[in-house]
Length: 298
Image 1 (cartoon, rainbow, N blue to C red):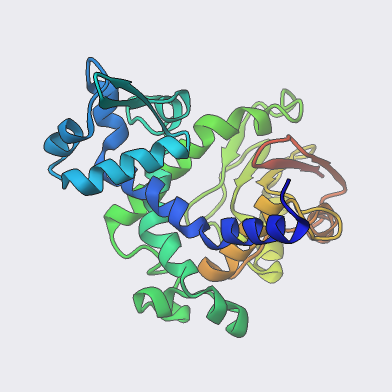
Image 2: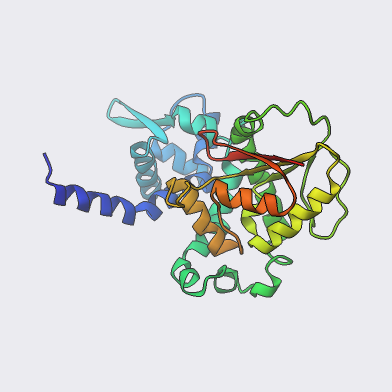
């Protein structure tokens, strides 16, 4: 049995190597490893995978074996040859043909978010996003130039669709929405553009991008547009009451620091924002998944 000191060092090593794990996942997706194995009629050896992907044999074998350790691939040995195939995890979430594939979001994380996180230390010092440091985009141009290209914007939008293919049902099932026959999913330039008439306005991963002042302005606009008895459904990752956990929500809040001007919030903080905008009845529900739901009505 290892000592407490050894266990602590093992945990430290796991944390410090975390970025390597992310890069293995990103690289395997970018190279098309999981799609290739899904399309193959039988498990493939490393040499065959390398030949079809146009990659080095040595590098490919190292990547495949690491994916096995991460339970992204499984391997069997026949006549001394290692043959690789997808696991249930990769078949469900990493193969493009799967309806639950998360590939677009992973590619966005690899190409954009990961680079911003390389400047986390500076973000903590400055208290602002790191697009200038990572991509040369000044803060005052962030929300007009947050996407470096139309391709990147489309990749992010497709990534959001990936996420909702898995996470959408739990949050939309958190409340009985039958009293709201007409629902508007709010997007676009919602600080300026007119809001269409609706019974319920959906704000999915919107408020966490913005400061309290901007959130209040948006919520007040929605409150004015609401029909009598109407409301807003906010979908976000809720922090614990003291702001210390769950870990995923805390990491998302740091991500808002390095990429936007917002943060994740506690239920009490969302209640305060909604009450200040004129919403009288506010209910918070934790779904047990990545995202939680807050229903506020007039």
